[in-house]
Length: 189
Image (tube, rainbow, N blue to C red; front, side, top):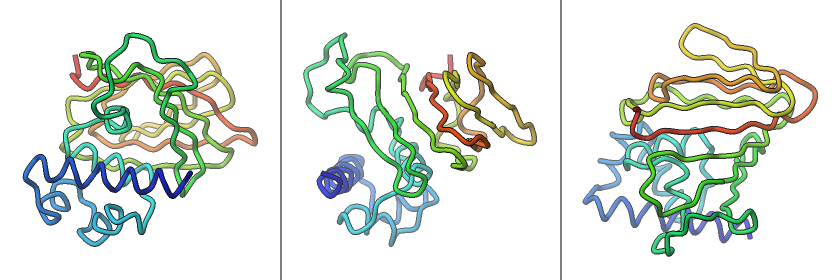
């Protein structure tokens, strides 16, 4: 199953890259991910981390949710849990579930994340993500968010609003997994 997902990710990146008329070098320059790594991902020889995949998606003009939505899938306003796309980051083990219905005209994506104790994911500043904003709403556990020079400690029920393109770090300093929701607005309204 994991190998199938790696192949699907690789095929999707290659398809999107070619549809946009981008070479590997073009996508590497736009994403800040090396040409060699993108090539390895496209051939399913490497699993992208969450940070790498987010940078590639941003360079392709997509959110992670839009990337994982089933291409050509009939849009429905209802996204049943068993049909929601799930992906595990190979570096941290965090589990990402695309909750919002794919294929709709909405600029908002809703994602549920289970983030292991001690895990840390960094998303460096990236021009392709400017204008996107997100709310991080913590349900369980602890979460430490770094945005620029500011560190926010979230407890269950807390919600943090922040721009996406300026870069940020997710860190779970606790001894238990953190579970949270990301509400991403690709339009930045």
